[in-house]
Length: 301
Image (cartoon, rainbow, N blue to C red; front, side, top):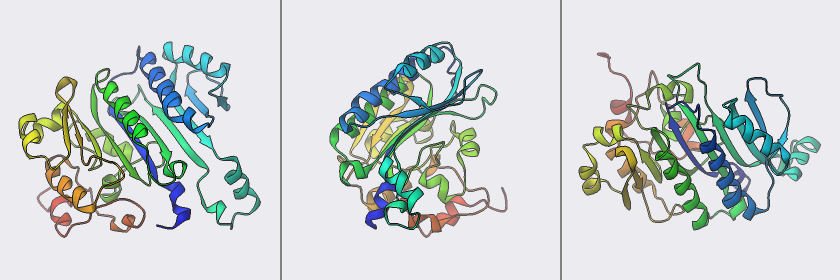
């Protein structure tokens, strides 16, 4: 991996649900404030954000200001459909404008991000909450406190919403309704894939938050605890489970991922018409000889 590519590699976490977020503004507030307190503040970074919702003015908001107090009231009154938070590195942003061909300008200026999106008019599309931090800010090695915070945030959410899956990974994962590496491999975007999360899981990663339906399709929690090729299996509320692939997120081999991919085959989504192995040049994909057989549609389908 080239050094300039590090800014595009992030620790990324997400969770999806078909639940309505009406009346759950406090849930979103708690997640954002914990992310800001435990992840952003130790890095001494600031956050700006945009909002989308009924009668909400389109402008740039600042988290560390009275803007956030006003936004919390909007959330509590169910007026927000989307929040997109970010920290933009000003030096890199300036380099992009001053010298677009420079080494610095080839880096992404968006070092920290958080995205919440829900659309009450499209209940078939899962709502999404996702967040990431470039590993450049951790000199290429994610600290344990960061990993623990990502796990805790998503785990707490599974007790407050009806989760249809989530995951944590280190990969080229920009937020904004991002597709997983597996979804990219089988040429699915989030909008389409999210209509099937009650049946399919999003891929294979270091941290995997399965719904009760995923647990059932894999053979039940007892079978998973006995047979899953992972470091940890933890039971979650409402019949879900958290599968942690290795002890340390910085140490995940292709062989680790390949074993998990095989175990997850019953719940991995299939391609509509093609595979995209070229994406493996910048995404963490495990490509196997039998992928066409496992993921491409057959003549009968």
